[in-house]
Image (cartoon, rainbow, N blue to C red):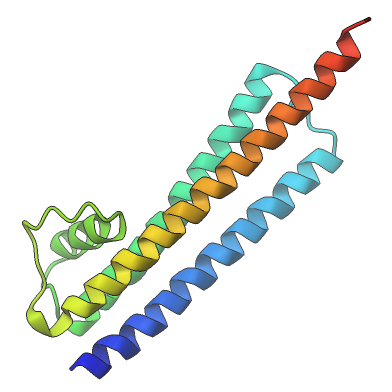
Length: 150
């Protein structure tokens, strides 16, 4: 059973990574395209909407990755209902792990794999968001230099 856990876990981890990678590449391309189109990020509202869009996109990516594991749990028969499967997947992916819902011994390594990839992907998203925020701050500084006559 351990080999089956590792195989299924490895495939799901690779798929979750691919989803996240594609999502971040897509977001980066969209941000570059919007910058090239001279979208006005110089206003507080423009910056706020941009950051909000990025946050919602990251939330959607993580939701998709959580649902990937949820569907796997259901297909493998680990859980019999969607609510329990998505709850377990969410608490595992986010490494909260309340412990009120646990998997059978046969599939607990799959839960551990989800926890590790969730931890890494959440960290990657945080780094991406910090990078975007730094770009916004750098843009603000350039605008302030243009506005400052001294």
